[in-house]
Image 1 (cartoon, rainbow, N blue to C red):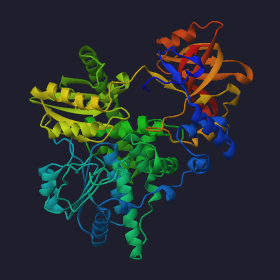
Image 2 (cartoon, one colour):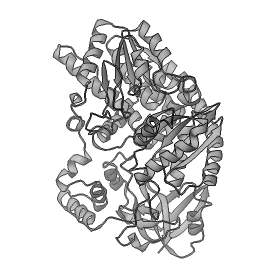
Image 3 (tube, rainbow, N blue to C red):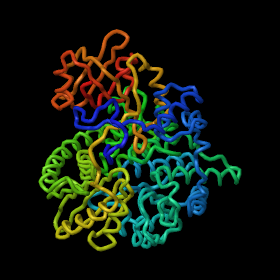
Length: 585
């Protein structure tokens, strides 16, 4: 976390920690709110600290800890064109129209497509799935594909794409409905309906939805229209595992209705009823209940692997299949592709980071471009650069006279709007996206000018102007208080993820009683003894400053900070600290 210098005293007096960060904690107003929540809602103070950090009022604490999808789900008709889109979809399903689903090749696109295919299958209908090849066709609808689909279908549903696809949609020759969340331009394509909370004529209240969230709302409205005709629609609650996967994997903010969608979706996924997700979890050796981490870092990359370096439609087919045998075969293929993807990514990441550092990483934008870099991994590498340098990042793979790139942003910087503006100014051949991620195509001889202009626009939003690094601490906790029951209560404030980071607590004056290497680079530490004993793990920290400090600790005491979690290894549930930082007390 980065930000302007905090006027409050450093938390526990830690001005410079082992990792070079200043610890910051709740300000006086937030502390008072936490105390009020603890008293009125009768909650432990650590739980109240988490709620206060999210601005929850004391009277709303109970509702926040048990979010109701019924209460938080918006009226689908609050989005423009929704009524028309749902009506045409229901009509097509009832009449037996020929339907095609054109989806993006990432998790959000695949899950969105699977939502529609599963709903239609429950209605006794089939649809054609079309996922464009990332390399040969690029992102979104293209004229040849849309002409081909339009000639053989009555309705095309474009999901997680299509908002900027004027010419391809005009070429379709049949009804087209767009269900998307990417930033819209001043004019919309000539579709029958464009449902997108990030259209310029929307108020942005639902702009945090991913495409699968938009598709889910359309299915809610479709079921409502069916009920008006006396027809029972498919079970929508059973589809929430797909919505949760897409929401987390697309790094959509886990706030508002997204939080409720993911909470309910995780519960649905835990029932292990969707063959594709069961097979994928098994091949990935997920032996615990699904969590946002599992969705974002275990399942998501495997679903994405087909679109990145393999066959583009593998992920969507896996998520949509009702056949366990097919699911097992698809999951094994995606797992193998994911291993290959990691190897390709590692090579590109090393080259990109060296190039970015040679160019300089202190400005508002970090970028790199390389010959033959696989377009399927440039987005992941851009995310790695963003994480390493705390700035928006762009990574471009060059091929011939053009480069295709992906960009990732930091909180508070609208990258998609900036990329779209640079494209409108002619420095990019095309570009678009949303606040946190974007894609672009650029002529080789204009890369420097385009990146300079993008850096200028991002600088105006404050990118690259952060002060000293800070580590946010949500509160203080004693080892004896860190029980499984307390952590379960804290987790009720989740799920944690984008825009809702997992809370971090500090433990004061801890004594290191054991420290050892775990695997190649990790660190396992034991603090205290007896009832005050607490196990901690610090990933990739053995050779870093955190490992050096704790390994040489001797008889000293340390303030430590991290995330308290439940380790369920071997069927035994115990408390563990995921250690982020430490400082001498």
